[in-house]
Amino acid sequence: MSSTQETVLEIHLSHLTHNFNYLKSKVAPHVKMLAVVKASGYGSDATVIAKHLETLGADYFAVAYVSEGILLREAGIITPVLVLHPQPINFKKLINHQLEPSLYSPRTLREFIKVADALNQQEYPVHIKFNTGLNRIGFWENDIDYIFEQLENTKAIKIKALLSHLAASEDHEERTFTLDQIHTFQKIASEISNRLGYQPILHQSNTSGILNYPEAHFDMVRTGIGLYGYGNEAKFDTQLKPVASLKSVISQIHTLEPGESVGYNRAYKAPGYVKTATIPIGHADGIGRFFGNKKGFVTINNKIAYIIGNVCMDMIMVDITDIDCNEGDEVVIFDHTSNAAKIAEHSGTISYELLTAISPRVKRVVVDNS
Image (cartoon, rainbow, N blue to C red):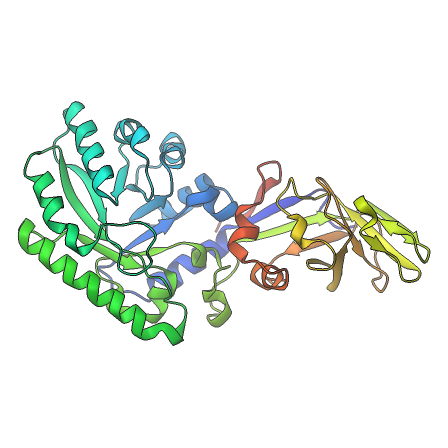
C-alpha cells in the first residue's frame, strides 16, 4: 500500500525553484521577473507559490482579478501585484490594497482616474495595455492621443508600465506574426515614452517569448504556466519541471462479466471479463466528463488505465484488467512522468484547463520546501 491515502495535489517547491532560476537565466540581469499566479497559481495554491517566489526574488506578481490580488496581500505578500483584467467596480478595493491595474480601454482609464481622484491619489502606478495582435483586450495604437488627453487633466495616476501580450510565441511557424507584434509594441512604446519624457517599464514576453524571442524581453518578462512546468513550452524544453502532481488511491476493485455496465447511463459495457478500479476523484474535483469513456487515463503501477464510463461527481472508474494492483494502491492522474499536457491532449483539451479546474476540496500538500 502506498503513502497516498486520499486524493491530493502535491506541490513541489524544489521544481518551482528550478523553473524560476532556469527562466531567469534566459534573460539579462536587469530584466525583471513577473510571476503570474492567477487561478490559484494555475490550480495549485497561489499564496504558497507566491510566498516561495518572493523568497527567490520575484520582482512582480500578476493575477487576473482584484479578489486574487487581495488574497495575496492578506497572506502578507509585499511584492508589487499587477491585476491583468480588473473591473471598474473593484477599483476602490484595488487602490486600498495597493495593487496595480492594467488599464486596457478608454472606459477603464476614465473610471480609474475618477476613482483615484476621489481617493486623493497622487501618481498612482498604472500599466497601460495595448493590443498588438492577440485581439482580446487592450488599447489600439490610435488611442494614444486619447490617453494623453486624459492624463493632462489629472495627477492622480502615473504610467508605470506599458504592456502587450504575444499571441503565438510558442509556434515557430508564426515567427513573422510574432516579430510584427514586437515591432508594433516597440513603436507604441517609443512614441509614449517620448511624450511622457521618461521610460516606463516595458513588458510583452510570456514564457515561450522568454525562450524564443530575446528581442521581446525589454524591461520585464511575464511567466505563467511555463513556470509551473505544464505549458506548451514543456513540450520542447525539457528543462522545465512540473510543480504539481495529482494523485489518488484505489478505493475498490470489481470484476465485470461480459455485458455488465459501469456507471451512469450504462455508458460502458464490458466486452468480456473486465476488472475495474474505482477512484475517489470526479468532475467536482476537476476531472471533467469529457475525460470519460476512454478519453482520459490515469497511471497505476506505471501502467496506463483508461477511464471507462461517465465521470461521476466524486468518482471515476478505470480498466485495470491487465494491471497487477490492489485496493489502497496509488493512482497518478498526472506527475513528472505522466505529464498533464499529455493527458489533456489525449482528451482533446489543454493542460491549462485540467490544472485550473482542480477544485479546492482536493487537499494541497507541499512535499518539499527547497
